[in-house]
Length: 450
Ligand SMILES: Cc1cc2nc3c(=O)[nH]c(=O)nc-3n(C[C@H](O)[C@H](O)[C@H](O)COP(=O)(O)OP(=O)(O)OC[C@H]3O[C@@H](n4cnc5c(N)ncnc54)[C@H](O)[C@@H]3O)c2cc1C
Ligand SMILES: NC(=O)c1ccc[n+]([C@@H]2O[C@H](COP(=O)([O-])OP(=O)(O)OC[C@H]3O[C@@H](n4cnc5c(N)ncnc54)[C@H](O)[C@@H]3O)[C@@H](O)[C@H]2O)c1
Image 1 (tube, rainbow, N blue to C red):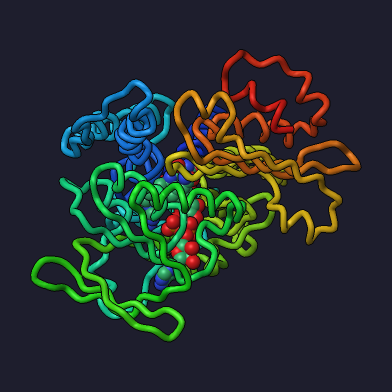
Image 2: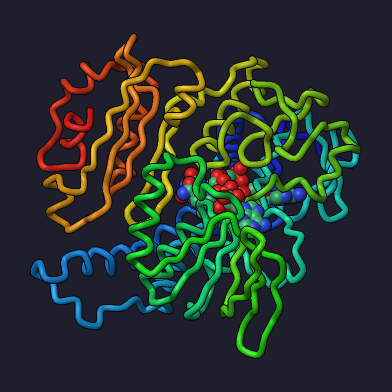
């Protein structure tokens, strides 16, 4: 006999777990399933382990910036094996803790790959489960690549588990993953090369600040090649030969490792969505604004696997998971609020953004005052020897409200949260400037940035 649940969540990452906990707390009979250990991408294979490895790189970089300013760097190096152990100290605990948290909240935890067999049924390891509602929260996977030899690439999960870093690493794609990993690898003693087929790497970020970051990265030993296509990857005796093409010119590069950083796509393979009449496309499960499937009312989707206006980021996954849960529980049609969600690429220093790009604001016909400051000479950056730091804040002249903010600099990943709050709450710059910040902190620079 099949068991009838109120809700089955497919995927125990940030989106799925937020929704499962919320519905169980309201008394629903909830089951959740994952094919991998519980925790999802962010905690096990993404944000969290990545930022632990980045900590080692930050220490090296900070010490180098203070060379001749009171710090003798000497042979300060990253011990990759120990740094990995430090990472495992966090990640190894996650699956059991997360599963214990769910069962403690009354959620039934299942293991295996789920696939739909009907509009209201799924099968896991040969057993059928039935539910009144389903939440698809299956995340994303690396985009399949076409060039010959693509099977030799490692992906971000492999990179975050490397037992040792080889000297020459080539990153395919100039996005979040390649830049973050290249910044870690360079401080760990490798020579990274980022190959982007487009002319604007990190295209979700302010192009002026991206150029500053690329220059800072060059000083740290990172090479970035734009408008360059990879035509083949072939194994050699000691590594790989990568064939490149740029403006009609071809060349080859010898490297030890090739890493996939060329984008991720929703993970819907194996779900058999068509069997359950669930519409989907390249951007994910097709949902209405309130996250219900456009074709199967029993089904909702959230996070990286859902086709929504939100970027594939952890805070979006969490907020969509909660909104989907609330809509299922109350049969409401609340749409997630995507305004004022900041994002950061954790290079050294970090590059952040919230709200509109300068070009978007212009395209929308907004009359914006662009307040640009090179903050590298400001006290907070002088103190630590940082040479690349800047802020570009876009203020709507009519309302005096911030419509976009772009920051490059140490600790600006924290500062951008204040600007996100200002956007979300429609604060004016006059109100923001009335804030008294602790001094000297990155927050105390905000008034001058405005
Ligand atoms: C290297 C890397 C670094 C990142 N860094 C950041 C960062 O610093 N900040 C940030 O905001 N975002 C970051 N992200 C993005 C962030 O990790 C994702 O947006 C977020 O984890 C998505 O959560 P989710 O719940 O939608 O999916 P996931 O966390 O991916 O969870 C989906 C789960 O579904 C399971 N699953 C899939 N198919 C099935 C199936 N058929 N049956 C059963 N289970 C299934 C998977 O095993 C997985 O555990 C990073 C991503 C990567 C790859
Ligand atoms: N700090 C963070 O928040 C963080 C960190 C890592 C990943 N993520 C999330 O994961 C997603 C995926 O990250 P990503 O870095 O893989 O993708 P991305 O979308 O950020 O960047 C992919 C880049 O690869 C380029 N590209 C695509 N195909 C190529 C090819 N064949 N050859 C050369 N270049 C190619 C694209 O032009 C683009 O610049 C991100 O969009 C982001 O949402 C977030």
